[in-house]
Amino acid sequence: MDDLGQFRDRIEIADVLLRYGSSLDERDWDRLETCFIPEATGILAGGPRLAGYESIVEAIRVALEPYESTHHVITNAEAELDGDSARLRANLIATHILEQGRFVVGGVYREELVRTSDGWRISHHQLDALWFEGP
Image (tube, rainbow, N blue to C red):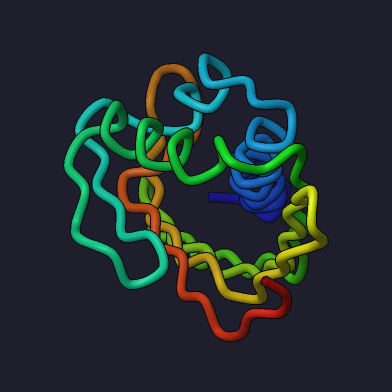
């Protein structure tokens, strides 16, 4: 693949995770599903292994339900390409607003993605929470 193709792939891969974060903040569960392949797996902050994008989206929806709003800041996306698959590592600071204050999580997203006919999609989603602040 030429340099331009790799550059385009890296942007499209990072965009999947950015779409993931904005979908959470907007509570747009249909849009969130577009980030995954149907048979995706996931591990959220040390929880059990989830199988299928529907179980991942449902676990996230239930986890975010108690919060008035959230704000996910995703940075330092580093992609490793291998043909039609890729790994992505990105930093996260997620602020969750509660009536009694803020709950903040700092962590790392570790993603595996595959190229599909609809573009790049997550095949494995992992959040490693590194620190917490607040109630």
